[in-house]
Length: 469
Ligand code: GLC
Image (cartoon, rainbow, N blue to C red):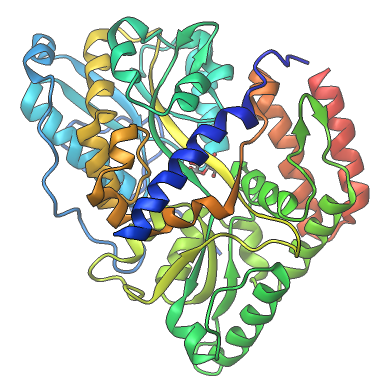
């Protein structure tokens, strides 16, 4: 097993600290694809609107995007045509569309937005195929925080052109994106798992604060669900991401860590099969068909958000982006929900899986210079502030994390100090991370569908041992 890049846990201490600082400042002061969604790979034109899945109340971004700071230089590449594998759903897709329009106006560079598959695991397969074919059909791409090791050999080293700008970003993420000394991607945003809860419903059912333990969550979700079903028969206690894909790896990692069951692979050792992990998975299995629908086993992020934002669930596990969306002008739950750390077992800490995305340039791009300018713009402090305030995407530029407008727009950051931020084991597994994650989430999925946790975790352990040998 390649354990040369083992700074997972250490690396994230820095951001935990930063988020803590941000927090201190804050204290003071059953599924169908969304209509119109196109298949990845079918290039849109620079002017066409990408498919945007809409939850009830989703509205278009009203704020003005920032001008391109480096426009004078970037204009040298005016007329270049780029293909950008971008966000396909929700506020993120809308932000991409708005920012790209500004970029085109200021630089003359044309950008076709190609919505990546909304499931990260599927996105991985699309990239794998494009890179295997050394395709020039992809210039700029969204890269999940767990992928620099896997795709490094296909990505341009950005040190020369963007090395200086990278110094403004959280060091641990820059390190995560540095493979064999090469900066293969620029940090774009970071995130971690959170618990969303309906403040109005908690009050209605006599609760003064969100649940701290998983037992409390179960009791509260059941009581609210039972009560609300009188008038709303499909109302759900708790929605989360239960489909067999990368999102389930994140959810299950949080359940396991908050039951004292560790982080799947630690210091290069496979630790997934332990009593805490068994207990955590047995618990989640119990949610399916009770406080969560049976259909939760096919939920991704946007399914959970659609349900919660539509007013049809009491609790939701999701990433920070759901905060701004839920508070959009026409959202049915605007002003009626709060965000807290996810529950934990008594004596354990809340856990939040560390997520986030980077922007990278393909080595096979025929328009590398123009592509670098697009990455420079989208990851700039100005664009990050815009995305943070309009879409609650946590910035990776340190000064932007401390910006009072940003702090104000993401009040949940003040609770980051209470959360154990748990990275997925992508640094220790490198290019084999995807294989390892698939073994893990397929096992978890089997448990959700009724299998015995202990037996399945034993099998996952064996599969991981073979995969990482
Ligand atoms: C979010 C996270 C990403 C994670 C994905 C899983 O997009 O930012 O890191 O892999 O969710 O669904």
